Image 1 (cartoon, rainbow, N blue to C red):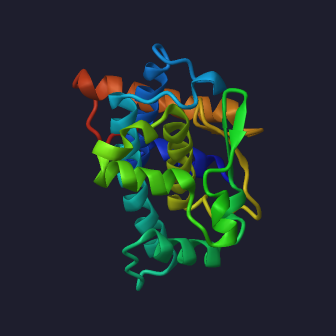
Image 2: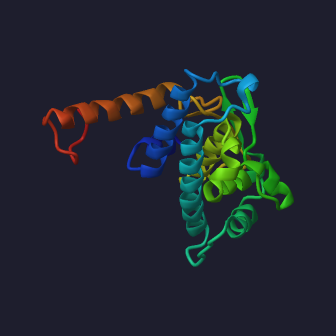
Length: 210
C-alpha cells in the first residue's frame, strides 16, 4: 500500500466523503446513547435513518466494486455482488473493523455464502418499518457503517492490492499499524489548506497547494 493510495481517500471520492458524514452523525448520536455493549439494543429514529442511509450506500458502492472487478457485470442483488466480490477476494469476509476498543467483521457471514444479519434487518426496516422499527439498533448501525467502510476501501485501487485483510482503524480514517501516519496527516493538512485557500479566493481548484 502506497502513501499516494492512502491519501487518495481524501480526494475526489464522494462515496468516502459520504461515509465520513454518516460516521460523524453516528458519533454525535453517541452523546445520547453511549456507544458500548450496554446500549447494543438501543433503537431510535436517528438510528433508523443511519441504517437506511448506510445500507443504501453499501448497495451503490458494492456495485462499483463489482464493476471494477469486471466491467461487464451488472449485479442487482447482494447475492450477486457477494459472489463477484468473494470470488475475486476470498479473504474479504475476514476484513476487520476497529472502532475504539472494539473489533468486528461486518462481512464474516460471506465466508459461508450467507448474508449478514444486519443486512437482512436493514431490508426489513426499509420495507416494514411499522413492524421492524426496533431492529434499527445502535449495534446494527455500527456494524453496517463498518461494512460500508470496508466496501469503500475495496472501491479504491488499494483495496484489493493487499495480500490479506488488514485491521482498519475506523476513527482517524487510517489503516491499523500504518507506518505512514505522519505523512498521511500532511496529506490531510494539505487538503484542508487547499480548501481554505479556495474558499478565500486565493487559488483555483486546479492550482497546486503552496
